[in-house]
Amino acid sequence: MSDDMRVELGCYGSMFGAQTPNLDALAAAGVRFDRNYCQFPLCNPSRSSFLTNRHPTTTMVLGNRTNFRPAHPDWVSLPQLFKENGYISLRTGKIFHDIYDDPKAWTVGGGAPLRDGGAGGQAMTIPRPAPDTLQPEPSEKLRVVGHANEHEPDFRSATAATQYVLPALAQDSAQAAHSDRLIVLDGDGEGHPDYQTADTAIRYLRDHKDEQFFIGCGFVKPHSPPCAPRKFLDRYDPAKLKLTPDFAAWPTVPPGFPSAAIRRHNADLFIGRGASEAEAQEVIRAYIASISFADWNLGRVVAELDRLGLRDNTIIVFIVDHGYQLGEKGKWSKAGSLFEMGTRVPLMIAAPGLAGNGRTCYRTVQSIDLYSTLAELCGLPLPAGGEGTSLTPLLRDPGAEWGQPAYSVWSEDGRTLHGVAVRNEKWRYVEYGRDGANGAMLFDVHADPLEMTNLAYDPAHASVCSELSALTRAYASRLGPTQA
Image 1 (spheres, rainbow, N blue to C red):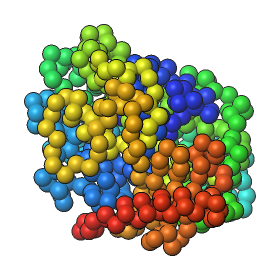
Image 2 (image 1 turned 180 degrees about the vertical axis):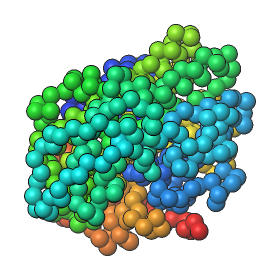
Image 3 (image 1 turned 120 degrees about the vertical axis):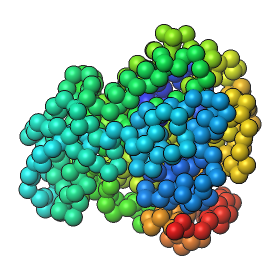
Image 4 (image 1 turned 90 degrees about the horizontal axis):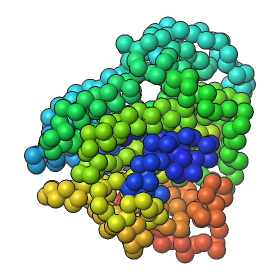
């Protein structure tokens, strides 16, 4: 797994030219799902959903502060399913949301992962910018040793790194101190948790090569703060990164869009401050360098699996918890994004001997479908109550008929649904508020891939909106009771 990684990979036609040779090779070896959607654009709800085979409307995990396990002691999580069927279940890095690891899931490696605030220790004091003033490109440097962050692993044993702190407004300064930074790791990033996660996965492969194993290998990059060794940053020239046509300095609701579509404040980067074009290019450079760093570490693990001769009887899956916006409409986060870039995520499955290997599947699928898929491929009994659909027909024939839409939701309060999105093979439709009381969006995903024009209020598309609205409302009606 990786965290906060949108479809900014070479094999997905990265708009910013991200170099991901190891993920590209994995995609070429298996089936790459071009249109896979997470069920919630936030770490804990997304992971809780696909790791339990239940939609967020069933888990009622609608934020980062709800643990599915106390309310559902009888549910069988994905790694637990393998553990209870004769596999040794091993975790390294972030699989479940890090503060809520599932104690029933792992034979080895359970508990809180290494925490990564990126780097830090000392805070840099930077004058507060005026709310309507864009700050110049930061140029000061600070040597750091390790900051804790409630959302991310912390590497306290890290080698020194260089940190560029982006100024934040006072009300957001606490979160900005952890996330709103660009960090250059020394060497190959040996002190960073992602490097250590790969090392642990390699050790697991060596130690358990003769057993049935399920290994959860979770990288945290490119989650903010973006971190990478210098060699990955040097691959990219920020001046050559072309910003999207809807780039904005601040979170901006375009004309014809409902105000509920864009949160007023960014949650991850450019917190409480505007982004100049030059700063945006620097941050995008750091983000895609972080992706290259994650790709490199994943490559180390797959190379060891190949060295041990395990490729022919091992299923390799790569999946991400949710997407991300990189300045589109002024948004630098995943939180609240029911746009394509917030919910579309990489998924590739390389299962030995399946006819679809080496091809791309363009059917609309959901992350929740992974549980049933792996259970079927490995011949494991599927626990009752699951809500995903096995993707094995598409692994055998990526062009097979499918016809199932994908759903994603967002909640601001952890109890009610702020918005519901449905995606089929032609349209993305979103309703905000109960029965669309706070507006709607409709996009023709082929004619308008950047989602520049909202068609929801065009009379010519009334019938389409009516049909998709019924789907979103039926989905919202499944919302269960709020957990205590």
